[in-house]
Length: 472
Image (cartoon, rainbow, N blue to C red; front, side):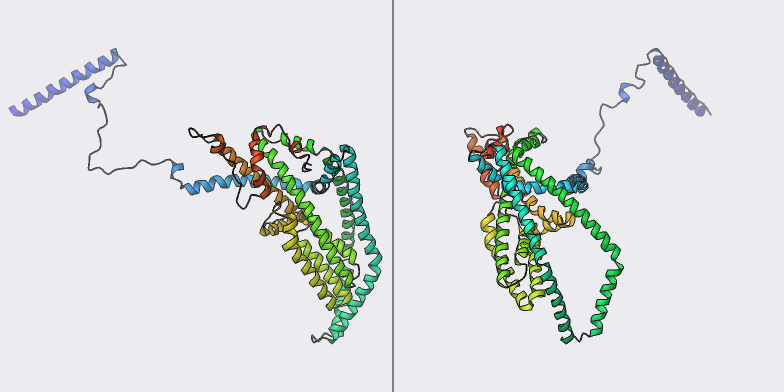
């Protein structure tokens, strides 16, 4: 009992001592609220390191760093491509809404590229700009009008003869089917004729609406021709000012490069139009002579059609050649049609392997796959007009992009730090813009143009190329 009472007395003394210390700390806290309630000995100076047997835990990286590099690059490129595709789609929708104006302006660019060298030559001979422009424009439009009038006159003059020969050809085909090994009977031929007549009778409304739509198309074509004529006239006269105004829309940092790419793109367009006209004339002349000597009717109108369709690469030659073969088949029979086919294929093979490489050269070098895809895309988007302007557009873009790439590479080399004792010419030589996308015109002239890039914003393409006849 005495031991128990002694233990309780000791416990009570300790509790009393703890209570006194708590009262002291409470009084100290009331006297100085900012005082630290915990003794300094109770606060550790630093966190002790984990023991050796504790497992190592790696720090988690940033979420962006955890994404693989290839995926990050693909994501960065993807959203930029989406933005670019959206911009192109919006521009396409705008062009569709003003399709007539857009095609008229594109046609005026092609005509200007064809006529502008004549204006430059007349100016070198001493004629004023206005007189040279008026003479060239009037002469060009008169020649185009005479060609159109000649085609219409030939078609109207030979329409009756062609209709009679077509009817005779249908009768010959009917007799051939009756005597052929296909065992076609008279009743089957009559049924086919009756079905065709009923189809025409039941679709009179559609045919009438198509005729009215054709009238609307003719009105739109005349409007587009007038717009193209006025645009061509102003481009021939004020092409330099138009290009200077266009350069002002480009940011100042990109203006020197665009000022150098513009004349090269224009030279490419000029070379394409002039080369295409020459090749089309050669095709039309030789195929027309073949049709004339084979006694195919309307040989001259067919030759003009071949000339016009030559401006649609690949597809136009096939369509115009097939038309000539069909006319020969209906009028003159299978043997003459076969001979016409041989003439068309021979001329087109000579054109593709000899004339185009020799006349166009490397100035408008576009891969055949790019030609096929661009013509198909242009035809799907905008019909015949889109197929006509697709290839020159691709050629111009190819030249401009090739020059801009070479120009940026040369500027990067010039901006690189120069080694000690090396001259600027040794550090930044003029690069040759090689690769499949660069054209020969860009590679041949990238050095001279890029070396004067500091003053390219002050000098316009028309100032540099006026004596060569390359500015609009």
